[in-house]
Structure formats: structure tokens, C-alpha cells
Length: 280
Ligand SMILES: C[S@@+](CC[C@H](N)C(=O)[O-])C[C@H]1O[C@@H](n2cnc3c(N)ncnc32)[C@H](O)[C@@H]1O
Image (cartoon, rainbow, N blue to C red):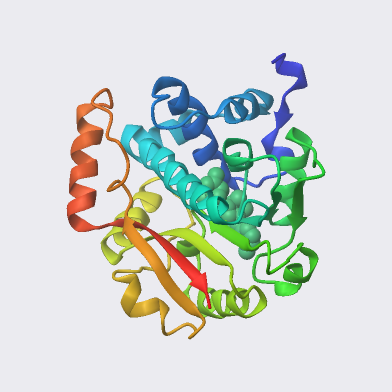
């Protein structure tokens, strides 16, 4: 795209804010899905990235190969969780919490779903500049924790509802996440949610790395064994499935050797997981 026409991210997003964390996953999906299309195809992310004016130098260094591949793996896993839900509920509503510049809708759309991308107001303003709403892909401009938004989504228990939250929950303490999940389960019986989480070791490593890059952002919530923790949040939350980040991802021998080594270590230490809950 012509440089002059690009959307400047800093008109919407403050540097080192939680909103800025949306750029890393977009960059990873756009760049690596081009390089390794076997895992994920994401032409919409490539299109979004081309429209943005942002200095990616620090981000590229911060992510390195293997963290960027991890973001691709997260998207792959969450897509599969949505697709599984849609197999049984083809007319469902999907809510992407902390959507940032995520393009999942375009990767999983079956032509019938109603999809909402929810994020903080300035993040949504930025998103909408790049991609306006469509009748089946709307936005919600709200904090996830300001739960009034739950009243504004189409919820038909016969059609079902599924939520995803990629790269979100570890930025908050448990006393914020637990009541939020409880509220979701109470408001959307029969629905479900898929999200990623990290363990104590990963929180420590991430926060050390953030400091090295002079970032004020830190990870707060660590989840080791989800079975031991999540049932305490609400009796209406049932674990349907959980697995480590790469356990269901086809590892590409073309990925850099160091990245594959880091993935092996991460799997051994169970640092990152995908959890899928049902609201009963
Ligand atoms: C790491 S990014 C992940 C973006 C997206 N899920 C993806 O995978 O591409 C985290 C996102 O959560 C959003 N976020 C942070 N706090 C939030 C809140 N209280 N309510 C809604 N969204 C929030 C940020 O603005 C950001 O877009």
C-alpha cells in the first residue's frame, strides 16, 4: 500500500499499552503464514499488516522466531476450537474477547455465524479503520470486564454461543478473571470458551523479558493445572478439554531448528496451554 495512505497505529494506540500487544500476533500471523502456510493461511492478516504504519523493528527482535511461531500455533488451536463448536452449532454466535487485529472470523466463517470482535474503545477504533463492520462481523467497544456488553450480543440458546480469548487472561489477576468467567457462564448457559494460559515459570520468564525491553507490561495470572483452579471460579464452568500449546500442532521441519528446540522445552515444561470450557 502507498505509504501516505497507511493508518498510523500511534493515532490510536499508545506505546507500551496493553492495546499495543495486538500488533505482535498480527505481525506473526501475517509474516509466518506466508512463510509456513501449512499451519495457517491468513490473507486478511497480510492485508491488515500492509495497511498499518508501525515501526516493527523492536517487535521483531522481541518476538524472535519461536515466540512468533507460538502466536501462529495459538491461532491454529483457537480456530480448531471454534470449528469444533461450529460443527455442532453451525448458526452460533462467536465472541472474540480482546480481539485486537485478529482475523479469525475470516479463517473460520461458515457463512452463517454471527461474530463479534470485542476490545477496548481505542483498539476498536483502530480495528474499524482497517476493516469496517459487516452484518455478520460486528465490533463491541468495551472492556471485557464491564459486563454490560453481554446484553448486546445475539444469544439464542438453541443456536449456541462460543467465545475465544487469545493472549488476554494472563494480563490480569485471578480476582478479575474469576468473576468475569463466572458471569459468562451465568449469562450464556450451554455456551463455551477457549483461551490460552501460561504457567508460573512462563510468567516469570515473560516478565524478565519485558523488563529487558523496558516494558511496563507484565503477566499476572499463572495457571498450572487448569483442573485444580478453574472449578473454584464457578460450578457452572466445566473443563471440556485442555492441552499444551504444540501438542496438536503439526510441527513443520522447515521451522528454524532453535524454534523447534524451544517448542520441545516448552512442551516438556507445559508452559503454555489451551483450555476449553463449557458453561453448564
Ligand atoms: C495480546 S493481544 C491479543 C489480540 C488477539 N486476541 C490476537 O490473538 O491477535 C491482547 C488484546 O486484548 C485487549 N484487551 C486488553 N485488556 C482488555 C479488556 N479489559 N477488555 C477487552 N480487551 C482487552 C488488548 O487491547 C489487545 O487487543
